[in-house]
View (cartoon, rainbow over the protein chains, first blue to last red):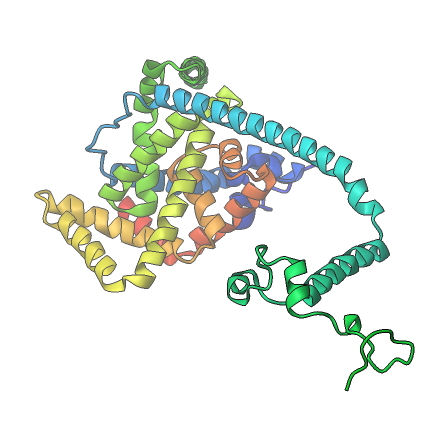
Length: 188
Length: 207
């Protein structure tokens, strides 16, 4: 293919060539390799850019301070890395122990649970009722609390039942004086 | 032709020396890391200065960058990418610095402006005033041009033409594929060429 020497690369194509020759189409690549005008154009652009870089470098100051690296940073880093690893392992071990302990606790609870679970709600109600009835019976016998028992002397063990019977006999033990079959002195 | 062959050979020799130093430094050799730091100190400092325009900030950031590199070196996978890796740390640190500065500006506007002005006036009071004036004029113009670039195009442009890195290195630093980098670079170049400011500057510089 014969190249048209008048068909020079445009500014955009030159810029594309500056970014990277390989991005140009083969036609323009070939033209660039043979056309002095286009080569000059390209080197002018490249020259401007390299001058920019050179100026930027020459017009920037040099560092005044020297770099300082901490003397023990590396060993500290290794040390801290080891400490971190050891700490992680310790945490993991504690977790394992804790989880295993938890499992034992659960096993114990599980072994106890059937006793609780076998008692049905009706049985529990009956149990509660029995307790309640016992309390009521105790209260009906003696409603006084423990601390009032001394004052009331109701439960004085020194006064026995025989003496109380003598002092205040029960009604049904009295003689039936109006009975016709009664033998003995007649009342007036 | 012969000269370019010599340069290429020298470059290869340098690269092998770098790789050797990086391997030693990664294995915990402090001296090897100090040699690496000496080799790249100026490049990293300049790279930071191009983006901060403050000697003090550039020195502080450079120190931070090398400290971080020193700590993270065992994590570096391929030793032949040390330069790109170091520059990627630098790019991230500079990005953090600008982010922090923006936040500071937001909450403490007046004092930051005052500090910036103090730094600017400080350079003018130096003995070599003509050099400082040229420097100020140049950086002002560069800032004027780059201000109009989107962030990615600006970064790629500075990395390529001011830090003078290869497309491959830039793609490793910014973690983008080479064609994306080329696209950004092409767009940035178009804007750069279209800027009258820089054309005037270079025309004036030639005469």
